[in-house]
Image (cartoon, rainbow, N blue to C red; front, side):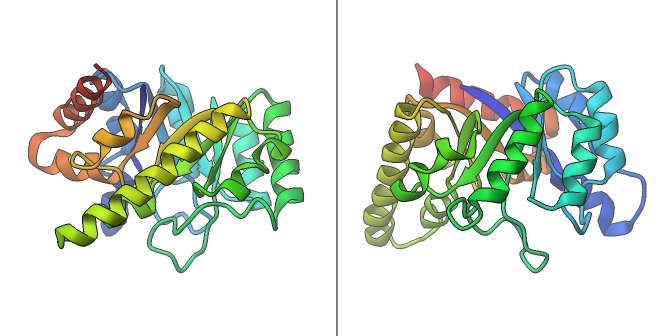
Length: 247
């Protein structure tokens, strides 16, 4: 199972002071040297963390795999087409949100999603959509013309944080089952299966055991862990955890 590390929150710390450091580009080099399979960033419309400059430099220096998350916004799409990363993941986006709140509504926005995916794929960019583990939504994924589906693990991750064990047990199992069924369905439709959002060192184990999932994208928990153990060690710890669960 591949690990893509989202380095957005290195830029979040930088932007807290509006200065030049810490530089997410420096972070990408450390993440790669630690053994991660790729780098993920989200170029938002409000540029709250990652900037065009970051994506441009990352395109030049990343030797593994650069994946850029983006909305259906035309301006952002134009920039990304010029930079030409290895992969893109189409996500929903609201300026008011703290982080991505849910999966992309590919049913209501099918036309726009399909057009955007085609423009990316015509440029040879591997294209993914970030959607909920919902059967009705997943069945429409092939209509989007994408290469892969990234399953939103946000609700699963939120339930894992609930402290009351009797609530945690029932709801956690239910959310995990949704993801398992979703992953099986995505794969049966001929698309690659990725997963991410809210995954951390405590809740990733059960997700890693889902055989259809080929890639995880994890950011906040790794950057948070890096405060205490350093970025290289934080990445290595996550890689070791993923590896041990794959045995």
